[in-house]
Length: 431
Image 1 (cartoon, rainbow, N blue to C red):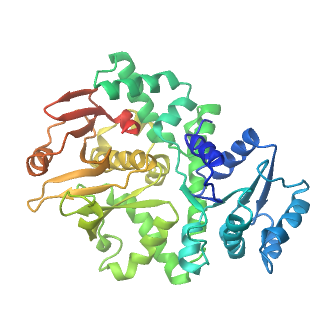
Image 2 (cartoon, rainbow, N blue to C red):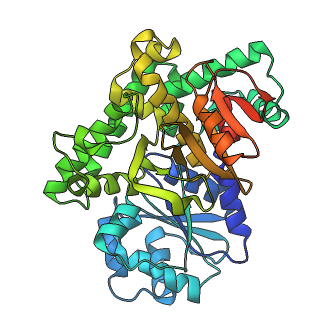
Image 3 (cartoon, rainbow, N blue to C red):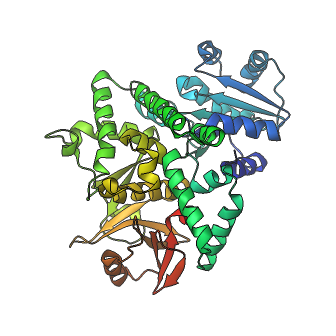
């Protein structure tokens, strides 16, 4: 399946400033598959090493970690000669071997002609908790996410429709009604399946929502198992409690995260490590409130006020045990959940596009779902689950900060009026 990150990998391969690449991301987002496909398409051979499936591999890095020492041994283990610029070296689950991570520094300094990509599912957690000797400044870093809606559409054979959506977004011209309806259906289908490549492949292969849900449940189970890694026994329980509660809080009218809702009397001091673990693992992301919408946004964030969104829509609905028909027909029973649901979806698309997202709230309670920096400008984004696009809070924001324009995401077709760019929910990937 087509992944946009392939373009980044190709640029990395050709760059004269190329360093060993550290590819992060939650488990099951497609890191290993994508790197191996990239290697097979662009190199004469791929030398693949997995520290999870081959625990003894770490012994190779126990003493000397210089390239001159390691390369002959790695060639022997791989059963093929590792050739500079013609072989892609891949270290998978590198968080299990601190010395291998440290070795990247010496490859950068002493053997820059060797192309190396390393991947890790819990790399952020491992580095943070185990105090690894991380090769700061000696590696390139990239985070990989689940598939966005555009990648999903291409996988579904709807690449031409995705292209038309991009054109309409750029020109603020409506998509023909029949295509708009088709795109809305694909959007809802994406909410059900999500962006995990295995789930997308399962749906394309079978069209069976039950099999897709089984795959999602398996991924959720692997996340729960991961919570026991790089965590003490006391933290494991807190991490699972926090994760279970995130989807509950998204069902509330006010989606701001509250520790007291995890358990009665819950406080930040008790659960902040658990939240940090979930964020470092790539399973969730925090969106902080900014007290003022001014540059740089990071200077105005309130560290005590934030929302938490999960990284994949399909896993969100699997965890809530909502059926495909609940989403396809947007049944009334989930009305209380729709607001948090579409906020989560939009945050996923914005995060995949590389934005650091914030939300804004005025002293009188007016709230803007997202504020991002786009093309050097601060842009407010208002999100609505349906076609009701009356937004009092957006009016307050625009009067206060007078942005160049605002974006309103809803089920309405494309348009532009009174400084507000109307964008249908299915086109969030264009932002």
